[in-house]
Every structure is written in C-alpha cells, then in structure tokens.
Length: 116
Image (cartoon, rainbow, N blue to C red; front, side):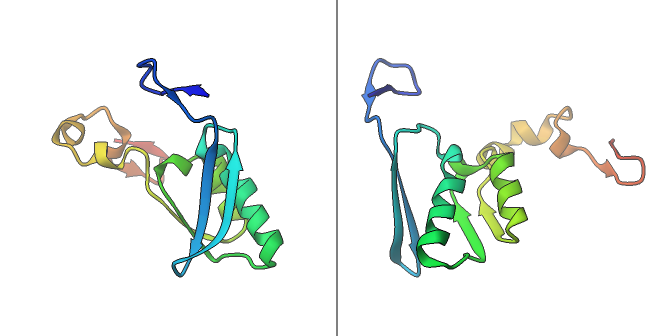
C-alpha cells in the first residue's frame, strides 16, 4: 500500500497498471510496484517491441508519462510523440498568460539564444 498523493491519510493500492492499446485492441499489459508512470514507459514499450517484433511509429500517453527521459528515448527510436504536457491546463488560464516571468510568455531570440 502507498499513501495518497494528497496526504489525506488514505491508502491507495500498491500496484501500477499500464495498458497498451492499438486500434481499440489491448496489445500489452504491465503490472508494476513503481508508483510513477513516467518511470515505466520505456520498459513497457521495450517489452511490447520484443513481444511483437514491431516498433510503433507513434506513441500517445497522458501527462503522467511526460519526462525528459521518455522524450529522449522516443526521439532516439524515431517515434512520433503525443504526450499531453503536465502543465497544459495551467497554461490556458488567464493568470498564467498574464505572468510575464514565465518563459512560455516570452519571445525567443534564436540568434542570441535568449528570451525577451
């Protein structure tokens, strides 16, 4: 068992389950005791590839799988990546858009390699 991330004293199951789907069919299942999804994606995709001898050209995952390691891995495999950014909903708020200190709200100067 593990404690809920909200720290409210509730316990959650100690297993993490991933399901891989292609064309509405389940092509892979993974059960792990690792609590973070982002640490499981590479292992899960490698297992799918070894079981089916097929490399998927595109990978779609929810925000919990977003990490620099996962992006690097998928880029190295020349796979198209569709992972929703963890901050996607936050970026759409007025408060975030008005905050001039955020890199996302600045213009990037490619020649000088800096933000304005």
